[in-house]
Every structure is written in structure tokens, then in C-alpha cells.
Length: 341
Image (cartoon, rainbow, N blue to C red; front, side, top):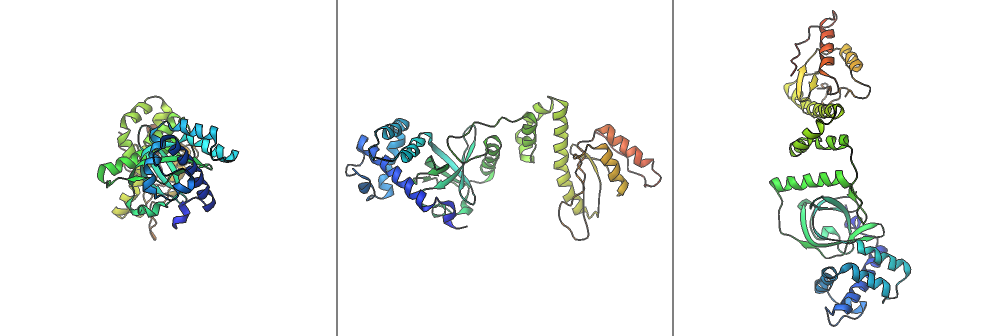
């Protein structure tokens, strides 16, 4: 992916830099940070690192008041549209982040303070690839200022890169926070950030059950939710069955089984009937429409397929009934005894 793909358009980039330069000149006029700067032309004669004290003054003082005063006084004689854009910068965010992902048009910055949030950010100066390679992610960064600009989020060009290599449990924690942030807020692509989406108990439970890591991390929340209603208890067993069905396909393939139909309750296989088309017809009668996971290959294997049903929607009584009906059928071979936990 080219570096340009993650940058603003040339016109938008120039507009941002011009407006930001006028604001910095105003801040310098107020606090006399760099003596020789009186105009934007003066500012442009300095290197970026030389301007850092001026930029930091903007965010160390009463930033919102400075921006509002600049808009009210309009010392640069900006247009109404430009003043409106600068006024929007009162919704700025500053702090430390972790850059966790590159996407086609931006990079994802994770703020993992509580509650964690993720921001889709575009650079206004150097492309991110000039700062670090994608293979280096996740990268911790500090002294970051995120600003709304033309319905996007940009950072202002100054960024501190911490010399920290994430690994082991810390890297896992970052992944956990990233997933939680997406679940709670989505990926935020404009400022101010939206309020947290209100999730139903069912949505929360499905997120907590999403993978093994979540099931371990949110064990107490899972137990609390599943006890609230029969419907949530059913969802719990359904999600456990789905998780087991996925791993079971791999296990069956490793055992060299050509085809296997199994009934799952929680994470346990409770019965294994013989492969037979009538088995599928019985299961469809017992499971509500749309609840049965039809046999699908977990991995594409030439001339061989290991399959598993997710029967977490079926009650224990229903499974017992199904096993009994199969055992009493003259056209089916005997079914192994069902061990019900």
C-alpha cells in the first residue's frame, strides 16, 4: 500500500497546515514563545522540532480558550468556513496512544484508558510509514494531538515514539483492549467521539463468549448474565457449542475421520450417531429454523470432510428423544449411548 493512501489530499493537507500555522502564530503572539516569529512566513522558516515548544504551549495552556479567542478575534482575517473549521478544534484530544493497525486510508490509534477507545487517524504531515514500518506495530506514541478536520481525524504532525517493544501478555492486553473498544464504541472516525452504544444483555454475552480469551477474561460477567434469564442461559450454551464445534472439526480431521455427526452440549460431545441422511432430518425437526449449524467443512480437504453440528440450541430432553428415535429405527445401525452431563 502506498504512503499516499494514508494521507489527506494535497489540497486538504495544505489547508490544515495553513490554518494550524495561523493558530500557532496567534499563540506565539500571546505567550512570546519564539521571539522571531510574528507571521506565518516567519514560522515556515523554522524546522518542525524548533516549533515544538510553541505547539506544546497551545496544549499546555487553556487550549479551548485560546482557540475560541482566536476565532472571535480572527487576526488572520480567515473566511467563515475556515473559522468554523478552527472552532471545531475545541473537540481536540491529547495524550498517549498505541498505534495498533494500518487500514487502507488511515491508522488505528488505541486509547486504552478506561473506557478504551479506538480512533481512525490520518496524518497531516509525514505519512505514518516514514515514522515506523507496519511490521513494528503495535507502537506506543505520546504527546499526540488529534483534531477534527473535514469530517476526519488528523494528528498535527508532532508525535513522540516510545522505545518499547510489546510482547507476551502486554501484547495480548492491547489486543483485548482493542476488541473491547470496537465492541463498545466502534472505530471512531470523527470528533467529538460518540457516546457509548447501549448494548443488550444478549449482545454483551455474545461478545464475552466470542473467543477463549474473552471467556476467560469475562468469566464473572458471563456467569452473572447467564443467571439473569433462560434466554441468556440458552445463548450461553449456544455460543459454547459453536466454539466447540469449530475446534471439534480440527480434532476429527486429525483423527482421520471421513465424516462425523455429533451432538454437543456446552463443550461436551454427548452422542455420536452413524452418518445417515435421516439424522439431519431429525435434527432439523428439533432445532428451530435458522438455529442449526448445517454441516460445513472446517477446512477444505480433498475427498474428505469432517463436519460438526452446533446443537447448543437443543435441550437435553430433546437430544435424549432424538437418540431414542434413532436407536429404535430398523433402518439405522445402533447409536452409541448418550452420556448426559
